Image (cartoon, rainbow over all chains, first blue to last red):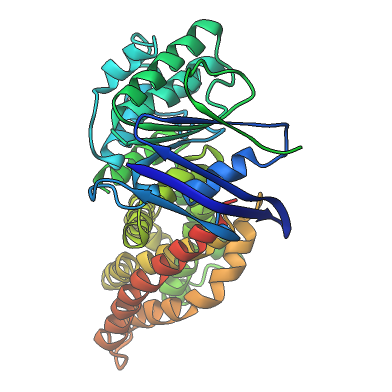
Length: 199
Length: 221
């Protein structure tokens, strides 16, 4: 599998945010995007995922025919958690699993992986910020997608959960997946490439 | 898609009862009419279908602004747009429309016969109006989805959606009301306007979601 961006450029409101960004990711590789606020990390991630049109350059994904384009092959975890506060945690995860297809793990099992085995029956709205984030991380586990595109994944997490998420990412990489992460904090991904933006 | 349908139904039933709000608004519109028009029973029964249709139309516009906005606010919309190619995004919009119709609009159709009594309508008139509402209101929802998709990024898009789509649903209103009249007023036919109404619903069931999907694809930022 191969995810390649060539001379990517994007703009917001008519102003160029970044240009000439290129990278190549192969199976089992991670890429950590760093840089100061406003430099375009989130915009880059959204452009790669296909949520924003690129002004120049291209994103190419080669993988199994099963997934097709990048959009079909990636889990995108943005700033928001994409969960409904009035549904229970298990209902939320169950919905995304059914929607994404490629069931990988049961909701309960995925919740155990993020250390929230006992909150499945609660409405998502009752959880704390960190717990909500961990449920959103569990969403990456319920369906299998080879590419994880995560934007500030550890925002609001405590130390233990950060370490837990790092081990989940490592397991995903060992499985032959890819991780594209934008972050300010070190994610604990040894061997991941770094893309420093801005300056 | 079934999962999306079930989720939206569940959300609609669990969070705030959008259907009940619509029915109450519908009741308010219908119940104030006799006060404004006066207790002329013949007049009321004559304009009954039109009043029921206007009430149902306005009430069905109520919840439309939340159709995509709620999903946008919590980030679900990104994933709905992202995870699907163009065809399945259209299907997702159709699914959301159907779920919205079942939760918010179907209660209006069910309540309409009851409210018809308030307008002193005959049994045939009530039946015909309920039938035309059943067939015609999905058109409003499908068209409303296009409006909701255009206004998805606006914080208070509700009024804008109404203004955008009201001119476009006028044909639905015209054929709906004329079919209802056709059932009670003798020389007027029932079937031709009813078939036109059905055709409009089918037409908008295609055009509305396609327009909404296009708009949603370019609305993400």
